[in-house]
Structure formats: structure tokens, C-alpha cells
Image (cartoon, rainbow, N blue to C red; front, side, top):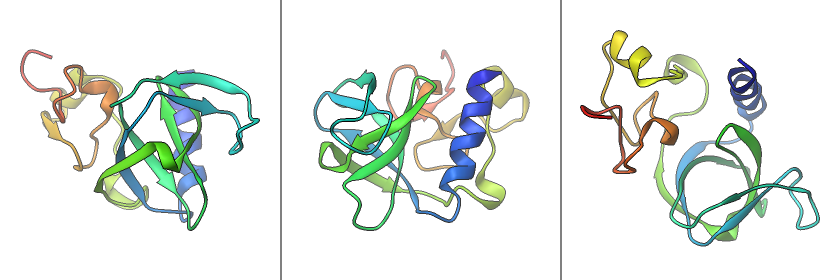
Length: 133
């Protein structure tokens, strides 16, 4: 439940602020509490990890979550993979598990489609909740 509340809070914080996009970390990156190099490190994000990010304007930092923890990653350590829909409107469906996604009849979901989350893409092939996952 706590993770769900954090995800909702993150989505609310990102609305209207920026476009959401999927990015790949180009190096092992620190997930920081604040958008500065002196911000507390909350987690370490491994190289080549797909994350959903929101980067605003010319900011050097992007807001993201990793394993349920929200924070900031330096933009210079991210490689955009695709643009996706804004975090508002009909595209903001959240499924906690693949079982929920299958029950709703939307699985599997590809990278860039509404409801795709890296946490549901266990084999990291850009298709979440495919058969066998």
C-alpha cells in the first residue's frame, strides 16, 4: 500500500510539470533525495536499467522511481528510449501485478504503451507481463 501511495504522489507531482519518457541508465547511477550532487543517496540504479523519468526544461536532474523509491537521477546518466503519454488523462492506469493486468485483459504491454512498468518486465525485454512472466 505504501508503494502505491508513493506512486500516486509521484504521478501527482509530475502532472503538468513535464513529459514522461522511458530512459536507460548509461552508468550505475545514484537515486538522490534532492536534485543535487549533495542530496542523500536513496538507492543505486544499475547501468542499463529502464526507468520512467520526468525531466523538466533545462534541469540537469530527472524525477524517477526505482524499486518503489522516488528520487532524482542526473540527466547526463540517462539515454532517452522513447517518449510516452503525459501522466494525465486516460493513460494513467496502474497495475500492481501482472495478475491484475491479465484480469483487466491488457497484458502483455509493450514499452511506451500505457500501463507499462519496468517492475512488471522481469526479463527486461520491453514487454511487461508476457506469457511465462
